[in-house]
Length: 199
View 1 (tube, rainbow, N blue to C red):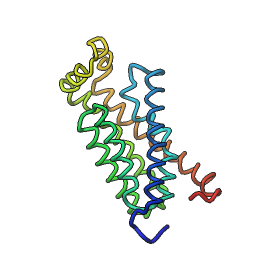
View 2: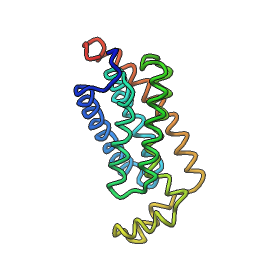
View 3: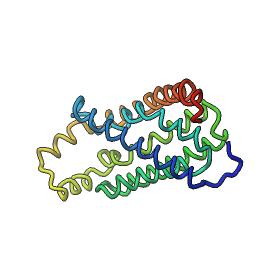
View 4: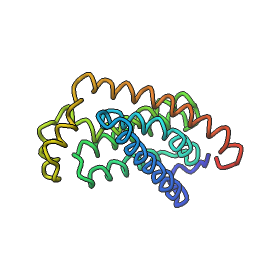
């Protein structure tokens, strides 16, 4: 680990690359959930993203090992959600979860597997930002969809499975998926990237 704790230009380039990869995986998760489970796509999207993104997160943590890398990735994702028409909550959730996840990872100097797993789990909850308004800001969410040109048939489909049962399903699914995805990511980093000298 570099003893200089300030992010350098190479660090920022690495963060940009891993953030782009994370974005692609979230896009894939969005497509997969929309095709396979359209009725529950909004509910399970964060969990599916957490399941398949662990390798990117663990590789970023191992590669940079400085405070700010995880935070920046969370901020970029939040900014994307915000400028694409989601509520400010989507931006806030990604920022808060990104910062807290970064602090957790920093506490073990980005080295202890269990702590990094907790960090990744917290980070994964940032993706609840775009979907939390479905449960807690329904009227504003509907108004937002109408402004974006969605008809009532579409809106009814979106809210057809939105209740407190699916809220808790979302929360628990993220926890389980993040643990599985994080463990897989750590295994991939150790098995492939560490041996190859990438980290």
